[in-house]
Amino acid sequence: MPRMKHIVVAGAGKIGVTIADMLAASGDYRVTLADRAVGRFDGLNPSIATKAVDVTNPRELSDLLKGSFAVLSAVPFNLTGDIAVAAKEAGAHYLDLTEDVATTRKVKRLAEGAQTAFIPQCGLAPGFITIAAYDLIRRFDTLHDVRMRVGALPKFPSNALNYNLTWSTEGLINEYCEPCEAIVNGERREVPPMEELEEFALDGVTYEAFNTSGGLGSLCETLNGKVRNLNYRTIRYPGHAAIMKALLNDLRLRDRRDVLKDILENALPATLQDVVIVFVTVSGKRNGQLVQDTYANKIYSAEIGGVMRSAIQITTAAGITGVLDLLATGKIADRGFIRQEDIDLNVFLANRFGRAYAPR
Image 1 (cartoon, one colour):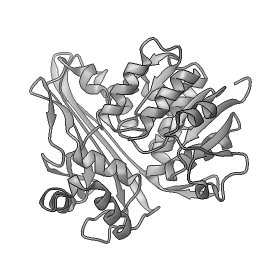
Image 2 (image 1 turned 120 degrees about the horizontal axis):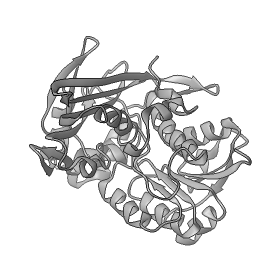
Image 3 (image 1 turned 90 degrees about the horizontal axis):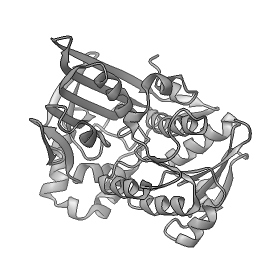
Image 4 (image 1 turned 90 degrees about the vertical axis):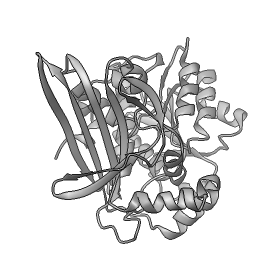
């Protein structure tokens, strides 16, 4: 790249800080990290500029994005739509991590006629799993079933939920509560979250998986009329879904999400000792024969730039930084709505950031 491109990272949570660190360490990006909670700026890489900004304030957002190449949104899902609006007004490329379906629809509308790229869902799921799944999908003449499974799990579970907080609590609750897109027997449908529980084993460990919202990204639209069944489920250790359903439904905490967030954040410790599981199965016809292809990968926590990062931090940050790098180097389209399935898996894995997903 001929000169350093200015990147704004909105949101200085665990993921936002990791994104800013990775970009700054590359030497090719000038990074500004923005958040209204200035205490989150402590201990940052000194090459990262910081700015106290309330992203709900349009004027502050507009000033922040002026002259920037791109803004990467790592704020809670309910705030990221405002950043997309500001990005369009400022003429900056826009990337986010959201799993929220309504937010993505808003981003798609904003992308119409835009001279810059709008690339939502650049994290893990939605995000990388879509890139990996579409690499398998391309190999089939006729599709039957596409099953996508992802989980970010503690390596050493030690409570009844068999879970530790590894990313945004708001995002976790949202995907447990909102309707889920799917294609069932050739029909595009909404299915309830936390349902259709299944068990499977991988490398001798038993897991459960159940419907959660947002993980399919734009694949329901892309594959509508082309696949018999398409679904996304979140992976957990057995027993998790039953307890969460009791909290959400029997105790009616789905209607008091602020209370549930408070409970989870005060009861479940965070951990850096985690594992991310990506598991995709595609079946269909190839050369007249019924075949099945599977992609399975596990990514563990690791040290990056002298700092220990959780697997979910690494995978989520690698997703959005990898896509940004492909955008900045002209390897993907640079205007309009860009889907994750438009990104070639091998091109992504060859990228310096996307390499975090390369099988070890």
